[in-house]
Amino acid sequence: WQFWYDTPKVYHLTQEAVAIGAMRSKACGGDATRTIIVGRQTEPLLKPALASYYPDGGGPLLIDHAGINPDRPLDVGSAKCVIFANPNEDTARAALEDLRQRYVTGRTLAFSDRAGKGSVQIFALGDD
Image (cartoon, rainbow, N blue to C red; front, top):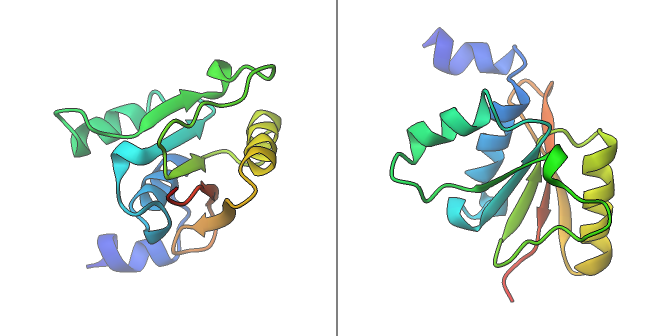
């Protein structure tokens, strides 16, 4: 009981854990195949954790900050949402701002852990 219910109300989760929670939220529709997670590094934590949820594939597209080219827009394809696991870093802020300019009907949402200590940014594109 304490591990699953009490502890998350008090202690900060990793950014990767918060990003997985965001992926499963209503904002992303729980559809991992239409989700992109942008993070400082998707390994060693995020990629293996998602592999346990989706052992046969079908998980979200993962993009490291190093994989973002500031001279080219982030390709979102048919994604419903883009989650920025490290939203306070310059690379993430620039990519999020680019999405806001290209998709003016999109919404930026904050998603926090239950303790309110860790948060990510979701850019929800909506269905076209």
